[in-house]
Length: 77
Image (tube, rainbow, N blue to C red):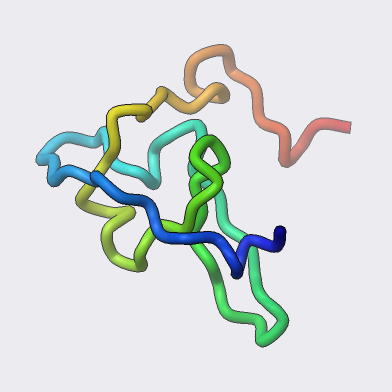
């Protein structure tokens, strides 16, 4: 199933810390056929509503791996 067909994440809770969806290991984004950005949670296989990735998190939040071990997949070869 393509990401654009996924449901939205349920149960996001407001937080005042840096532990928001955007800083989570599972957070990623893709673009749909119309080149719109879709924010996604790879762990839950759900979409994250725009804007909520900056202020909310779920119970499955996990520190980003590149911060934890110094790994950055974008530059790996």
